Length: 217
Image 1 (spheres, rainbow, N blue to C red):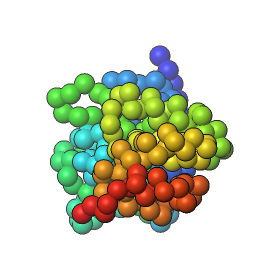
Image 2 (cartoon, helix red, strand yellow; image 1 turned 180 degrees about the vertical axis):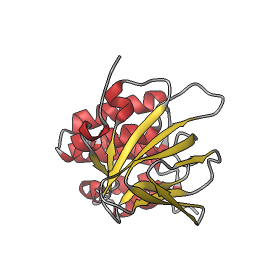
Image 3 (cartoon, rainbow, N blue to C red; image 1 turned 60 degrees about the vertical axis):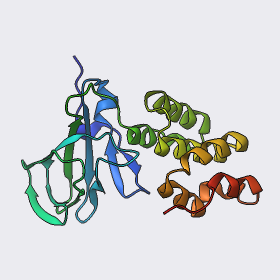
Image 4 (cartoon, rainbow, N blue to C red; image 1 turned 30 degrees about the horizontal axis):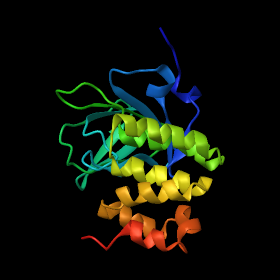
């Protein structure tokens, strides 16, 4: 048995510091399903806007439970008032979802899994988990986490991109360029790389443009 209190799980700022992620699943060592918590003050992001079809997603059905405070969800443009105790269930991976806190101290618990499939940790979770190490310039630790994710999700463009970022920052330019070239076959990540400061050390290297390849629609 393991016990944890959500408010005592150290939050990790992600999404450029806009979102406070409390890694419930990793803290408790849960392997059967995905579960995490997010906390926010009034007006702040408490669920990142996303769908479950992208490269970083787990293609999960998701249940969001407002356990403290009050949030406003937006699902495919429809606003949902969500005071404490509200459950919002999304069974369509294509639905765009996100939420902002209405009150200080709002906490939303997110639970998910892919219907009909054994649970696998989503690619985004490895990227989020590596944020503290990367910001502290412990690049080897960030690289190890992202490589762990790629063992579970071979060829995943989101993980390859984040791995290339960490490798570029660490000075491992050759490997970073290899992984960037793989990630850049996804137009979204090619576009990110053009302005991402993580790749500033590579911009004068002619191999950087070659790794990006031609613009893709």
